[in-house]
Image 1 (cartoon, helix red, strand yellow):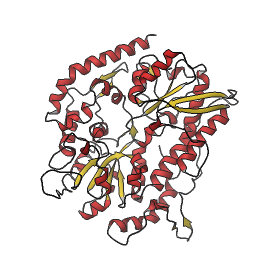
Image 2 (image 1 turned 180 degrees about the horizontal axis):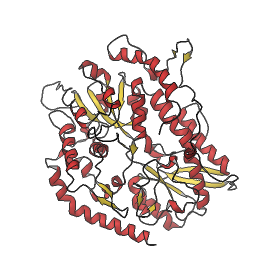
Image 3 (image 1 turned 90 degrees about the vertical axis):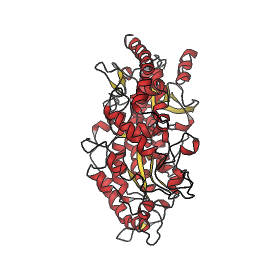
Length: 501
């Protein structure tokens, strides 16, 4: 999904490149691009903001087809969300901040177009599936949409709590703003309950990426893999070639800690394995001929190879502090921002956080690598997706579906460009050559239905504990196969019963 501004935007960033490259090479210190300091273009005109978008033909697949004149007479549209992952709450006016103003515009647009009042209640815990079920049983009808974390969303859908989207009159799942390339993954049997809307930013800013500290790369005289990414040669082997390149046991005690220096670290080591499995196109689960989830991990040699590679590369006690199962090893962002780590495995949204926004050194952004050069494209797994679910007791599902359609379409046009172009590529990005890589990560993000079901079949073992344990992946898979199969059978029985209604 390419937005509207890349060419003119690149010209502005190229004017800033010399400042960033000078800082990386030890030259005169410059203000970082994201400091708000004004720079000038060749004409001498100050440049302090991202340029205005160029005029382009509008893609009809990004525009809703809601009938003209829809008027719901001031009806109340109410969503329930958890505070950490709210969509539109508190965006009651513009304040000049790009994301705030875009969210306000999404809400205002739907309200004025359809004559409704849009509100969001922050009442849900993260795992809110049970809350949604209890709400239906209570007989209340004020809340019509639950914004649920992926795992809670799929489990609740299988308990006949939400409306299949095929029955939502005004939602057009063929449109780009409902998720390109993920509809099949999010369907079960003949139904789709989940769709990747464009107004819930969690599903976009949580796309996985790699950050590279350019000061560390310069200090150790290490190559920066821009060209590898561009030519499709950024692979598992290319990344593994950096293993051990940065390694400094400062106190010499033989035990790596956050006070030492290492090559690899993560904002959340629990996601490392699943991110690389998705990047290599070998998730734990796929779909069978009837479009039901099925395990694809047992006996899969490529998957076992990826698991072994991740364990060796990122959880090696000789080269990583992520080799022991304690809280101190879960997050190494501090090492990265203080120039004691070369690569940080993270998410695009980390660029918006205070730690990385305020770090002194310049960093580059890269997609997760391909398994090998034969793989068609890079793949970026989006963690903890949030999905809007229409409760099946909604008194006016037509109104609800129309509001969701309007907001998702408007968000695709206004909110996502504000996130990607204005915020990620320009405001908080301090490396001009990362602009295209940020776009690659955003364009190749994916969600996995298997993520949602694996949590209930395997627990959290596959996400990180296996990496710490002295057990081969093959042996572990054999040990969990029977139990995982039993859990999946229960899930499929619920799904089949629902499909037969």
